[in-house]
Amino acid sequence: MLTYTKEHLRSEINTPGLYIEMKELRRLIHSPHHLFVFEVCGRLMSFTRAAAELGVSQPAVSLAIRQLEQALGQALFLREHRAIRLTESGERLFTEVSISFERILKTLNHIQPLSAPALVTLSISTAFANYWVMPRLPRLHRVHPGVDLRLQVVDRDLDLEHENVSLGIRRGRGNWPGYQSASLAREELLAVASPAYLARHGVPKSIADLDQHQFVHLEEPFRPRPQWRDWFQAFDHDYVDRGEGLRLNDYALVIQAAMAGEGIALGWRHVTASLIKSRLLVPVVPQSWITGEEFHLIWSDQTTLSKSACQVRDWIIEESRAASMVRLP
Image (cartoon, rainbow, N blue to C red; front, side):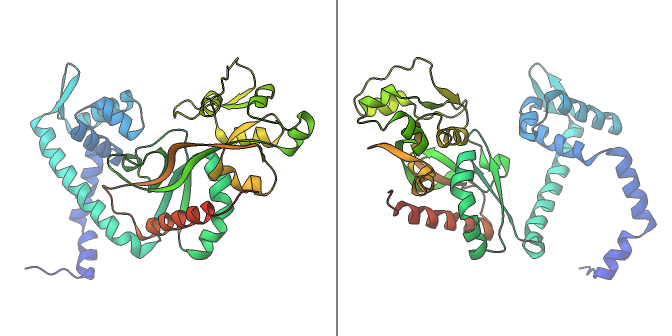
């Protein structure tokens, strides 16, 4: 068995022969990006699906593969009608590239905790970021000062595994294949408005009286969310949406509009609780609608969470439990 010391490895790296080999490799592989594109195409056997995973256009994927093939002087894929398959040369290269990438990834995962704290990405809506996470961030930093938390604001539910996201928030019943989850809050919706709006327009005396007021509507393009007609129906009241009122596609904007006195909005209790406590918003009727849905913290069961991600996960769960115990004024 050969034993290599650090000094021996350094001398090997600095030898003229290895330099010539690396120069030849750079000549054949114009860009390491081409190898990443090739690996995804070979794994998915589709330029279109590879483009979707890489977040680029299909022509960009085709160009990268064509440039790699031209540099090597070999066809790596056979293009068939709506399908591709590896050539013999492509099979050999794909095997070596896959093994090499796997070894590199294992090494990076091994050395990462030694060099820096693990990055934790939390995928959330704008409203949850503004009104739930941000006010609590100082507490997180006091409890876990070494955590590097990044907030990724999104308008749709992501595939955390493919997007390399540690944690996410999702509305539903907690049964998502491929994910583990922890319930953070039941979905409870209140009708809320600013004190200034109620001072101008009066306080509704009942749910039926609400229909005489201005509404702020949430119209999310990608995720189904309860509408005013659903809220009224929960209390056996008919409501006809005639297209009036302010309509916004982001819930943070809905809350901002309500605080600015533009009308009455549906307020998720777990998001608006701090605003109600500080009297920036107030419930306009005593009734609230518990829909049966919940908001969950989720993480992929295909990947082991880092220590930092576990700390953030446990902190969010604990904060949610504490918030659920607070009574609204």
